[in-house]
Length: 481
Ligand code: UDP
Image (cartoon, rainbow, N blue to C red; front, side, top):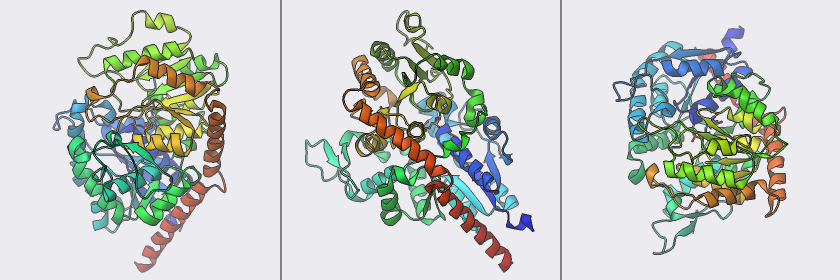
């Protein structure tokens, strides 16, 4: 019967916007390919997920999250709502306690496949005990996977001559040059996630394969390198955010929680094509008061209209202490400061936007690329310094703000002065200094991104082959029963 050949997928996303949003998009892709999809999450995330999945026949299941027991505020169930970076380790620890409830859900549902996140690697073990295959999602590019792998296996920093600051990542296609100070040392900088990452690398080797939010044409050399040298089986399904683009549906992708969705888009309507710079540093970026002030002054001095997303400050920090005296009156009409959650995809795809200042989170990078925009790169941590090299050196669609080092603690971050911000925005939006060519290349990539997910495209092909393969596996198991 029809029911017998219907694929049942269980999605278990890590609770942080940069991981959850793309995985929900992946669920929509499978659902559109007639799979029965279930998303497992916690109570406080369920509302957001429900609004993102509005109109999609996707089931949502909820298990409790031990926020209070983990020393977090009640209802704090997403990395985005953790009030200060110091509490992030508590959050990571708390997710580890979901193993048992996950196991019970799995026992009951017995799906054909589990899709889970690198930060929930134990989900693989639970699924493996029941002979349910696991697809892992990391939210990283192929390029970043290749860089991390090379760093782990070659230790180029260990053999770097004293006094030498810059080095090339060994064994990778193209000459990828980095500064020593841009490399994360997990054991030193993030002991709280070390154990999870180690377990996750192991799972990456053993699981059924990787689902990747990227497209072949964006990083063909690294896609091949990953499949042939670094990892194993992988399917590229991206840019997954494009599955929302028929969506005048405002609720898609967390827009229902966005601040001023309507007013922000109608503000953009009053601007000329390609004139506005959009500035946003993802969901997890805490800037110091001093840094926020420099950004404010730099954006004002650059004299391009802008939308700047400022993350709400932590408890106890004075809300607007960073804002220069009389700032909002001075920038009125020319600059929009959005506090909280911005409707990023809608903004990026608005014709008035001409450039994106980004922290190089992989989702933001892909969303900028999909919108055909040039990027100004301002990485903070994790894979972002690698992504910057892909954007600036390999794809040549970006200008670097010029951050030299990754800091373990946000208060130790390098301060970029107003002049640096102004310079980057001028280069990004101007026509000199390779600006026209950069914009042209960005538009071409945007076109290729849309082709990849369209009919006959490379990402559509990978999705179809993955669905086909999982279906065959299901039918095979039924016959054996
Ligand atoms: N995002 C958004 N509004 C915001 C900030 C972020 O919609 O105000 C979305 C953005 O579109 C992207 C995700 O949140 O899909 C952030 O993921 P990314 O990998 O860029 O960065 P992270 O937050 O993981 O550092």
